Length: 384
Image (cartoon, rainbow, N blue to C red; front, side, top):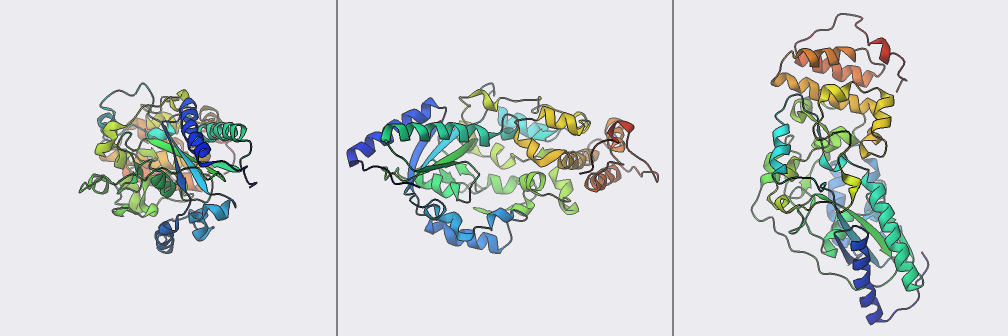
């Protein structure tokens, strides 16, 4: 990272103010600045990794404590510009938290985490952060920087805390008094000694709602998450079979989980997005599992182009939906449409899909006859 040209203290304060204005123009709801000393977070990171709570997310461990040392990741870094972008679609009506929770009780409903119903946030934030960084460089004459959002081995939430964007809730997500937790964050590591903002204070109090509501009890205590039990991990990060003892607890959550957010009192203040990128696509807020389960791999790739869901691939998509369809047996045992959909995938080319379909059919008390295969329309799907 090249060193920037010298700036006076007054110049740097003026630049910090204009950076926040530019951020607002680019669709960010809040932009703050932090130093990059995260030594206070190293012990917690090491303990979490040592306990194995990261599961198969090997990338969390691959850089060790370097994740807490941004200046080692990008030499020359002295500050982080941290930005918040809200993602609730503008059309989201009051009472959305209750409606989201009500869908969990609809046996055929496919519940997709709200952040994933629109465009992939990685692309949206990175593009706008890059524009902001280039504008800073053009203004300042020189700037060494690196832009990222959930894409580099650095502890983003401690940086956001230091910058004053919010505090770490008991569910481990960032919380803001003005915006709840329904937002993304992204960062620009820079070599300019900009003035820093004050951190926010904690405002969870005695509330335990997120801990109590977690379907799999993945939140072991305030700020302690075992990702191996988290539904977001199980449906997105886990590549293989979902542990049988956890399948029934997943319910109809087919991609991610918002329970700890929809129950959080602070999300009554959640803000609507100022950009159209996060508007719902493919009617994912009202979709039915049977319909999504019928998508071929070609349809999956085409319909979810530009979506964060696409990265899990069609095989894991079917795995997740099979679990949801199996869990529908609790309210609608033997439902003809669900059983027919599962039977149609019983001989799928993927052993992973077949395993979860067989489990789901057993939940509906359906025993497959030997040799029961897949429909001819799916027989040509590539081996995964």
